[in-house]
Image (cartoon, rainbow, N blue to C red; front, side):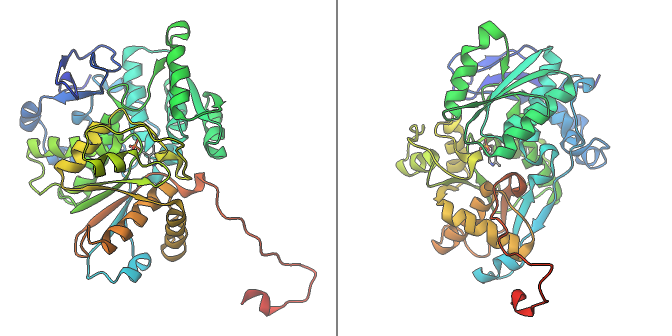
Length: 408
Ligand SMILES: *Cc1c(COP(=O)(O)O)cnc(C)c1O
């Protein structure tokens, strides 16, 4: 047994206090639930040095700030601290004056995306509660992460994806043991089917922000970033925003770190990046409203951010506004151009969602939303290898005479 510092849970909208140690979905107000910790006690008992010298893999080093009560319930697939890679040649055209553009490369996690963080926590808590069957609606990466961690925990999983989800996502999900289905609709339609099966099948839904623990896993991106930067933070964070778990989670992490006294710096401006093909949060930010409207006919190749309605919309918007950040949309053509550019010039094959943050940073610099001397962190949320890539079309004939002009 390890010590757990959770005091209670809380409705993110009304502040209603909710009991710990029992399963929860949404609050009585139908809003996401957040986990609260005894940070005063943690401040006395845990130090930054304890974290720095931890032998736990990857984000499990932050276990005092995580909700799993019994260490035996931690489900792990060998997580790593994801590297921060400074962009070099790919930013030369922006004529920066010594300022850094760093990429937190989440592609190195199990299943090739940062969804591993959230699902590792959701599955560990499911193990703690003794759940036997988990279900998820997904645009791809959450499904494969659930599949892998559930398989590891010996828990059954069912995954529903829109039928135009990238092929590799649905195949990897099935290959990691989930009962995998394609649905002729969007992620919300998948969620409705899962909801309909709650009673008769008895699965527990681990949909984004509809259970309290995925956000605790995503929070570790913020903890890890702070530790890697020497308990400091960048001026601006660009985050590809779908359901917003990562952005909300990092904002929560930063406040917990402040309260623990582990960081003293100014918090970063949080920038929510979406595709112009699905930009409900950007519209709500521009309109100055608290909740986003459903985005009709959502379409973008950055499938991880194709989320027409986010239940945590108010939390995303709150973090963006409180931090002095903004929300910005970039089109798919720019996203793909950014992906190809960074791959060719810096050797980093980003996923479209990650490339969107680069495209957004370019636009933000041009529009003066971010200055050239602000330090920036972009999140590459998955490996580019999971997405369709341009085909190789140039061919050589082994029997033909060598012709150097083929290589010009
Ligand atoms: C899910 C996903 C996102 C969006 O993450 P949220 O934290 O839910 O907003 C971004 N990029 C990729 C690759 C994803 O799979």
